[in-house]
Amino acid sequence: MKIAVIGGTGLIGSQVVRILTENGHEAVPHSPSTGLDLLSGKGLREALDGADVVVNLTNSPTFDDASPAFFRTTMDNLLAAAKDAGVGHAVILSIVGADRVPDLVYYRAKVLQEEILKAGPVPYSIVRATQFFEFMDAVLSWTSDDTTVRLPATLVQPMAAADVAQAVADVCVGAPLQGTRNVAGPEVFRLDELGALTLRARGDHRTVVTDEHAGMFAAASGDALIPPDGAVIAKTSYREWLAR
Ligand SMILES: NC(=O)c1ccc[n+]([C@@H]2O[C@H](COP(=O)([O-])OP(=O)(O)OC[C@H]3O[C@@H](n4cnc5c(N)ncnc54)[C@H](OP(=O)(O)O)[C@@H]3O)[C@@H](O)[C@H]2O)c1
Image 1 (cartoon, rainbow, N blue to C red):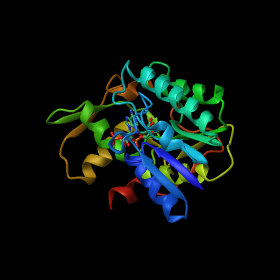
Image 2: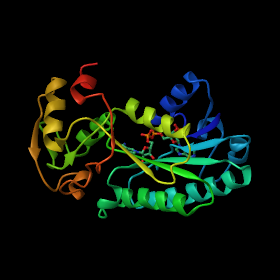
Image 3: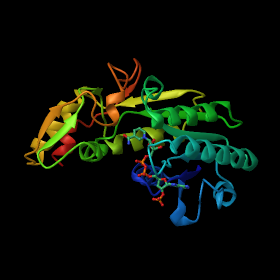
Image 4: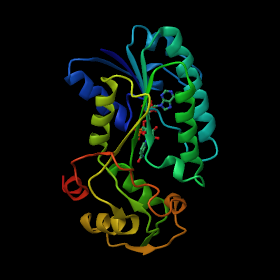
């Protein structure tokens, strides 16, 4: 299959390209550095020429009020070009529970991205993944000083980016789901405990202070970020990943 991987130079996109290529597919990475800008549409027609599948693994440069416009414009451009090119399957990567955290504008933007895809003209699949293990450093940096890291007790079930990429690659080579596949890691953690575990494993002597108002994930309450029944559970555990 020929698969156009938009955002194919990113954390997930680059691994999706590698997995698909290793499995004999023609996976072509596209991003601003290869001459494709999904915001303006530059390079899109050429990128989709002859593609059976397009997978959109781009991300908004910011998680703030600008993110809905990023996902709206990029999805509108992508679907119009995919329809013109006769692409038979469009895939996006969203976030487990995105619709359950309405106070977070970035999560609302991801729901908007899903809705545009569902209402669009191209057969589709949505993969919803939980937070990536690789995202933990950013989470720790948002609300830290020299001695403490403030984190809420939000429940999370994070997963390795490599497992996310495998799940996306699997969906790309299958028939369009016309729906959503949820994928998650094998263990549920409180975010503050996950932070403490991470700092200990790295020999970082800062301490975690539980603060229900700290950082982006303060907006997610209860089990909002925990996948529903039927989710695909990935194998890699957080401790195993940390030890690598
Ligand atoms: N972080 C999480 O825990 C999490 C959980 C679930 C789902 N997700 C979703 O996973 C997706 C991928 O995330 P990621 O961490 O792999 O992203 P990333 O590493 O930031 O990569 C983003 C990719 O998009 C490209 N890109 C940015 N702006 C573009 C534009 N205007 N036109 C074309 N390409 C553009 C980048 O190209 P350059 O490298 O050239 O800039 C890069 O290849 C996101 O949509 C995110 O919402 C994230």
